Image (cartoon, rainbow over all chains, first blue to last red; front, side, top):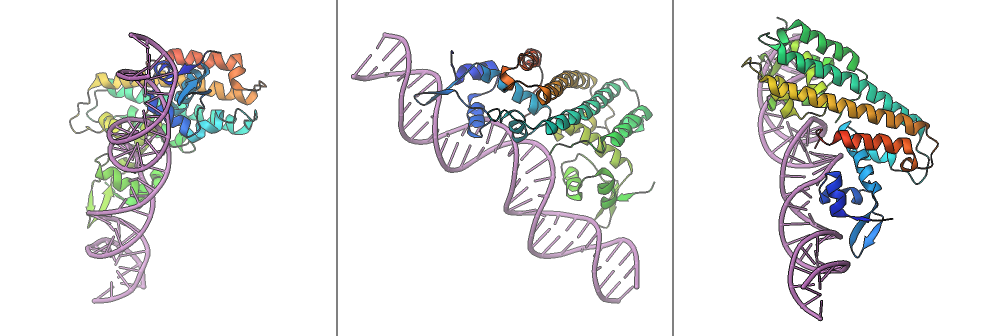
Length: 138
Length: 138
DNA sequence: GTACAACTTCAAGTAAACTTGAGGTCAAGC
DNA sequence: GCTTGACCTCAAGTTTACTTGAAGTTGTAC
């Protein structure tokens, strides 16, 4: 299997080498080996990094991401937490759709101030009610 | 108009008073006035905070959020950037749906390692292609 | 009119996720 | 076999978004 060095992975994943070293340091990714001091990665590392980016984009911490896909070795990621994360994502997607609609509305709405626009208020209030149970990032 | 003191707003918004003070300090929210030293807020502050939470959840920085809804006074938030943010949100929503599907799949899939599962790989690769142009959080 | 709980300010501390820089190592091409 | 550029390590610095704590102030209830 052909191995890639850090610069190639960095390039393909669109992340600086310093980030890859950091991820290695915290155990989020693991080089397949070393050539001298230099890290060598399998091509799958690029895929793994795409996965990590996805997790970050969804607001998960690197720790959480490690928990989801990291314990590959054991073969047994607990399923129930994963389902809960998926449900959480569904709620988050709902809220993001509301925010998207809000932004589009504000871009169109002639009201002097958003807070005076009933459509705007309705959307925020709707979210406030449904968002109660959803996770907030910190 | 009846004003709320910081504890009431904190309670209704589900945020600690220290956070409200911090948001005030950075100009993200503005108390309607003071009673002695004490901040007094309009009921709308609660709505505004819900809006801020939504923005945070979508991965916007407090600065970006201020830019979206903050310059209320001027009455003229530039529309084009807002539309672009909305489009960005659409892409993000697409990726989050992929991640959600991935999580659900991993919770079900009997493959010994995700990376060996072709369904898994296909989903990640699909995202990697589409995610290229999308914003990454930092 | 005094007690006190709830507010206030301001400086410093914290956590996550990196980046930067100094000083060292080494594989590859000439 | 030597240069060189790309890698390495490790410590310290950076940014964002807060929290904490000490020391002071004040509206409200008694």
